[in-house]
View (tube, rainbow, N blue to C red):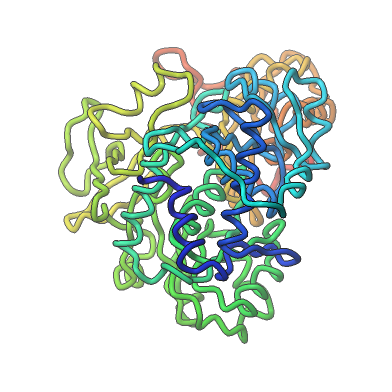
Length: 499
């Protein structure tokens, strides 16, 4: 069989005492990981979980979170990581759509579910099944069983749920390990992303299936992250460029022994030559890749020798992953011509949950239409140009501008029009800037307070600009962002941060 659980069973058999998960103050071996998840699976089935039932998890990174995911899959359920920073309003929208059988939540977040019609379970209860007799689980997962629904922020106001199966997730891993052989059985990998994001969830599955030792921190804090790399002799990690920049600015960076690192990848924003040069002084080449949630993670592979010379490029199609650039009619374009990036490979999503219309727009004849613009040179190397989808990437987290715009317009303020664009930010790379046209005086503190109730904190605008005239529009009457992006490109420093 080709399932995620099969892989964990294999490692529990051939290297039972090998470290699987390390959370600083607690850890498990592969045998403990397997046996604990089996007991969880048996418990979930006893509670009435049926194959295909969804199980939500709203929590920060923790050992019990990881083991619960494996238990859900073993029982035939579909794991649904819920963004740990979502408000009750955001959680209610998603839960209404996916109708999970139950939702596990940690102490910091369980109160957000109090007024939502769903069974809630304290995440700490997972520890009740850590020890005990081996469990007998009759259900056997199948390769094409759906395993996860990951919310992604696209150009729509509401997140879409990206669905993967055992086959697509293990297919993604198998392809990557053949392409990138510096990370495999026994490698030590640090995961900086929240498990509630696609980056965190995919890395958990990816490196567990490979038999690696995974190291987690509660959150990304540069000093602790760098210390873990050095002390634990980490072999690989990936993150957005602002993570690499934050590490390189630490006083400890210059003398830190990073010789154990064999793979460092970055995505979500361009890798500058200056950033590359800084890390190359430590003997590490930062390899930019291109990908998105819908393709399982990385859609390209960037050989180290090419990344040294062209850090701004995102690599090429892989062993079984194809990548192409097409025009508006879906026809291939010549090299060095801007068009939409499309991909196909074993790791592509199965569908958007409960959304056949958007699924049909995104997957055509086996190709995944990214909604991003790129250009490919004569050697097949991709350069990311811009997002066709209106997304702001803040600290590695995707924000749908439409979702923020909806919150602003529903704030009760006399706002007639609103456009949200990305403003440059030293800490997060990008942050939301709300530009509004109002027919009366706008109470900005009240506007931000409303957004704080409706949106996760990272989505709430840090800048608000008020226009005295209606927004520019296209020839078809749609609000037009390019003129405003140009207008505000260099004047963010003149605006006052509102939070």
